[in-house]
Length: 286
Image 1 (cartoon, rainbow, N blue to C red):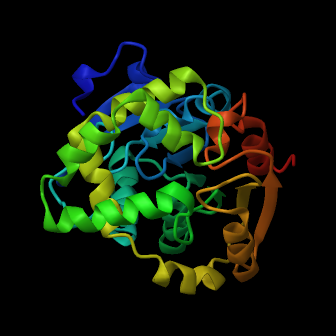
Image 2 (image 1 turned 90 degrees about the vertical axis):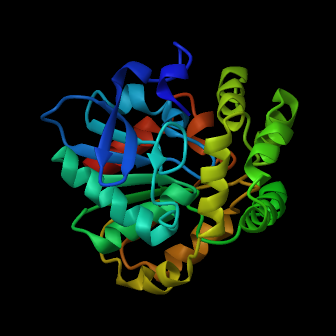
């Protein structure tokens, strides 16, 4: 999606810029006090940095937030179409942080972004990690059927992304897909997702990411993650059931698991975007 075509009221548009690193043009929200500790926020598959619209206002009072659109998603464009799997994205995000001159004090990821956050914590010196309904298993419900089938089709039929964008991009279909996650999203949030899904390049990036997604190595390495970690699990999550976070927590030496009311889009449902929970854990006040 061309950032010049973003609606004027797109969340945090004025705080975002393009940063070219190697063969990726990253669209990055960079907001908060420059001298404050840095947090890296990673959205999930098919979303963009806009999904932290409720989290950013409160958290940016205390931290400098780096919130990129993932490669192929939203306004971030990549010329490396074979680097949309878990490992390569984690590596490219580390390169982005280096280019920005930032060393995150923590990385926070939702869904697939949660898996990437854990991979980055394993790969780098980032000291703390938070996963919000981290996608550490196959998606359930509508997402579990829809995403893999379309991702497989994309490999054989290059026109799948334009067709999928046309098929999904009605407000009613987007609303049903979001509702199927177990979350209740406000109309403005649903309209923003509809805008994303109308963009063929965004849909192509999401499908290519799903086609390259492999979790086996990350799951095997979770016992090596000897850093403080917080896993938040929505009790009503119909895309990544809370049992997924519970299973991962059993393998992690320094993890705190919290089950909370809400669905898969937990941070988009909470009035403060989970800001209080995140801030308190990061500052040791929880």
